[in-house]
Length: 397
Image (cartoon, rainbow, N blue to C red; front, side, top):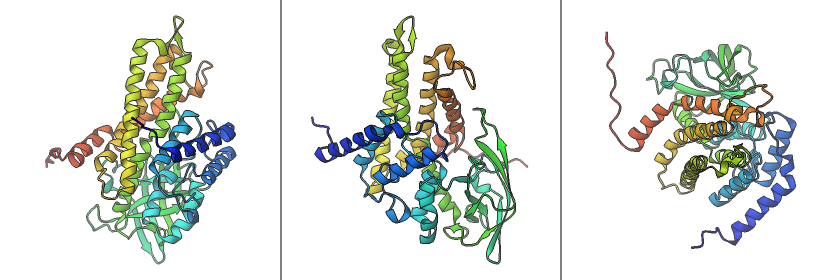
């Protein structure tokens, strides 16, 4: 049985491999998103079509036609080379595809190019202290005053707010409408007067999240995506892209390759852990889950090209599958390192700059954030498998 992709794709694979041989040394390692080397690498990747591949050239992308196999080849070769696959984040992974679907031409021209090139960093204003899992209960308000929106309220768990240039934010513009109908999706700059950011330190020991307060924040009325009061539809599109990004099979494959290399160097009693049958069995289980994750991703990708194909269930499992798998994968690396795996921070024995420990804790947080695993399972059972809905508890009094 011939499972090769054929001559055209093998030639393309050789092109990718040649690029990585020539430029792989320039791939940033643990560089900040705004670091010059990160921005230069992103620009090089876009110019060669290895990221932002299908985004039209007029919006700053490479402008290629969608091709699932070429996308898979790029992902495989970058993962095998342990090369940086480009910038991500909420602007690139979530907002850009939504703007391309729902934004105005002016918004696409103004915002997409600087976002994918890393020149414009975004944060997401969704969750509130009283509106987390039930996001539609949000109360942050926006009132139209002439040609400006005036925003008041509070958001929480605002990732990268301390670094962001802009925010995409859900606000209530129709207070008398049903809760899902009265929401609008606004875009505004984070240096607008009236915005206060307070850091929240998470379990990794870093302030990845923030509380964000809005007091009479004014912005032009045209900085809205979709129609007024119909932001819930835009929000659901964003959430779909968010769940896809939280279960990225390409990053997971890269971490799996790093785990395998770690098992080849770590020893117990003079024996490499890759040769230990117990650890090798655990590795094979992780490998099987990564393989399943990658095939599910192909199903999601193919549905975007074949409009009649229903990949609803395939998309529903991405976040649940991806976050739990990454947590288990990072945890296995910690086990492999033995007592060194317990080191953290500035401990001189910490390996790989503490990335295994940090990612282990980070993905434990993501099992909760972005919709807990329990909520994801409810979504899968009720909407994907058409099982009976969870009983509602009646309010007393």
